[in-house]
Amino acid sequence: MEKHEPYFNLLDALKEKGCPVCFLLNKSTHKSMDDFLYESVNDPGLRQEIKASQGFCNRHAWQLQKFGDGFGQAIVYSDLMNIILKKLEEIDESLPIKEVLKKISPGTGKKHICIFCRQERDAEERYISVFWESFDDPEFSVNYKNSFGLCLPHIASALKKCRNKEFVKELIGIEAPKLSGLIGELKEFLRKHDYRFSNEKFGKEGDSWIRAIEKFIGKEGVF
Image (cartoon, rainbow, N blue to C red; front, side, top):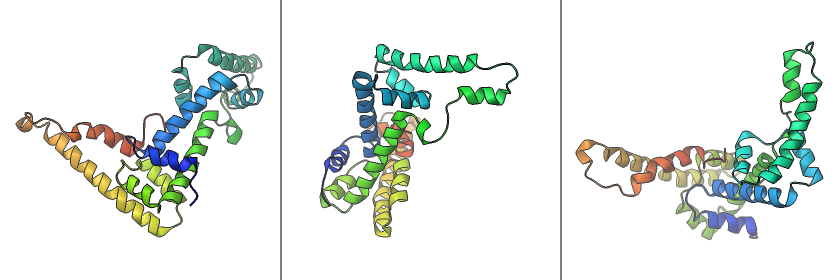
C-alpha cells in the first residue's frame, strides 16, 4: 500500500487518547470551522449551501459558536434570518399548519445537509477506508493493538466497509480483549467505592468510567 497523508494522520492518532477516528474527525471539523470563519464566510457558493440547509445542525452550530467570531457568524445568521422572515411574511392564516412547518423547517436530501456534517461524513469514510487499507501493515497493526482502539460506532462503520472475513475476525480479536480489559477496570473502580476498600487509592481504573463512555458512544460532539 502506498502511504499518503491520511495513513500517517491515522497512525499518529493511534497514539492519542481514545478512538483515533473520533480524534481525527474532531480535528478535521475544527480546522474546517476555522477556515470557514476566517477565509470562506463570504464565499458565495458556500453561503448558498448554508442557505439551502437553513444553517447548521444543532451540534455544529454550537461548536462554531465556541470559536467566538461573532462577526462571521452574524453574516451567516443575517442571511438565514432574512430568508425565514420572508417565508413568514408569505404565510397567511388559510395555510394549513403542515405547510407552515414545511416553510420554516430545513429541507431533506443531500443538498440540505449541514456543511460540517457533510465534511465530517466524507472525512469519516476516508479514514475508515484508510484503516482497512492499513490493517495488514506491520507498523500500523502494532500501534493499533497498543491503542485505545475504535469506539463501538466506528467499529460498526469499519465492519460495514470490510469485505475481508479474515480482517473482520482479526478486528474482533483485537477489540474483544480491549472491552474485556475495560470491564475489569470498571469492576475494580466499583470495588474501590465499597466502604470496606475505601482506603485503597485509585490507579489507572480511576477514569475507566469516562473511557467506557467514549468506547461506547465515541468522543463528545462526533455523533
